[in-house]
Amino acid sequence: MLSPVETMRADAGSANLVVALCPPLTLLFSSYWPIFTRIGDFAIGVAAIAAVASLLLSGKKPSIYTLLIGGTIICLIIVGWVPHDLPVTQVYVQIGQLLAFGVVVSDFRRVAANSTFHVISIFLVGLMLIVNFTPSAWVELIQHNRTWTSPVFGNSNTLGYVFAILSIYCFMSAKVVPAIRMRAMAYLLFTVLLFYIAASGSRGALLMVAVFFSAYLIGKVFKGNKAVLSGGATLTLLMVPVVTLGYPAALGAHVNLVPPPMSRSPSADSPPACVPTSFQLCPGVQEPAKFKTPDRRAGGFLGLKKHIGSGRQKIWPAMIELAGQSPVWGHGLGALPGPYLTPPNTVRHAHSDFLQVYYQFGLIGVALYAFLWCVLFVRAIGVLDIGARSAAVAVLCAACVLATLEVVLIQVHLGMTVALGILATTEFTSRALDASAVAAGDRAQTPAIG
Figure 1 (cartoon, one colour):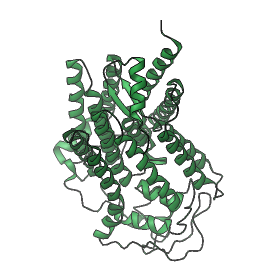
Figure 2 (cartoon, one colour; figure 1 turned 180 degrees about the vertical axis):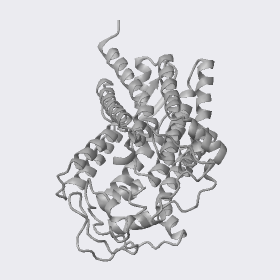
Figure 3 (cartoon, helix red, strand yellow; figure 1 turned 120 degrees about the vertical axis):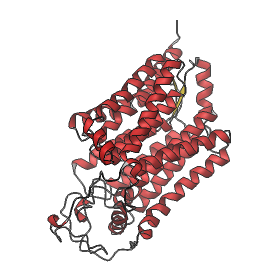
Figure 4 (tube, one colour; figure 1 turned 135 degrees about the vertical axis):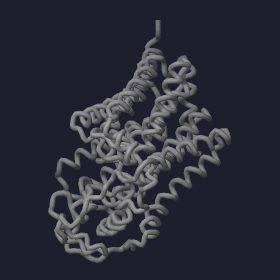
């Protein structure tokens, strides 16, 4: 009979299994179909509740990393909420999203995956492949070399990101499948996922997968050398401002870090004023009919037919200029830049997590967000197991690529960042650990900052 302590640890292990099964479902948050979006919302909530249950049932004291992550999230909420008068629903939604993400990444989990876990995970990944397969998309790809899309996610780039994350999930869980047939099935799904990514023509998704496997293989080759992984993490973070500023500049765009004065600052509950940026991004200046909607499926297999300009070369400089209207505190939670952008770039977000944070939380928020990334990388580099250490750092590098290209921390693709957060904080193993091994492993997984 198990002792009360052993029972609590077993319950914590079950909660960790629930968290580890959520990534395929959280990705549905980005779906175009309301029913799938609700499933994604539910999965995010389940992951957050299970993560809290794991923390409470494990009997561990909160690590320094848990405290730092929790404190950073709280500070972000304070910066985005307190200095602004924004009593809108979107504010409370974003607060809930930030808290859910903070809870999911607050602790590093070891998941002793059994056969039931692998059957369920393979089923969920296979289900995602089935619902996104349409005969018309196959015909368009084969006969006309048009990128794959599906009614579930609509946008081929979103589809590519979803399958990139699923491929990482499938690869990490498949490495510990004990049964040969089940492992073969997992790797077969992984291969099919790679095909879907290539068929989507999403260069960002392809880059995510390339960065993940490069970082993972480097970690394995150098036997988890912490100096090598630290260098890779540092390089990944440094590439964010280089890409954000360099990409528009390389395509001839001019970035105004200090914008010209405007009549009033944008807010979440007031109509936008005409913002006299260098792009003249004033709503209603030109009739929408003059803008031809670009064919987003013309990129072809691997995106080889896509133009180097993705639209971000226009959106990013405009976002920097708009955020510069309130550079310190930002424009607050719930503030959206879409009304300030002219067609066809009238998106509701910055197509960059870091710029969205800058727009809403200002430079203080950017500093807090960068600190959060540093904490996550430092904890990942301190993981005891070499394979788990390499995988955790590799997932964070891939997540950083996605955060540079899309808004994933809040609002648009929250399900993606929750899925990646789970993968970055989970060590998959196939062996059952006794209570003493779990206790020793938990202490080793969260080394103190020296």
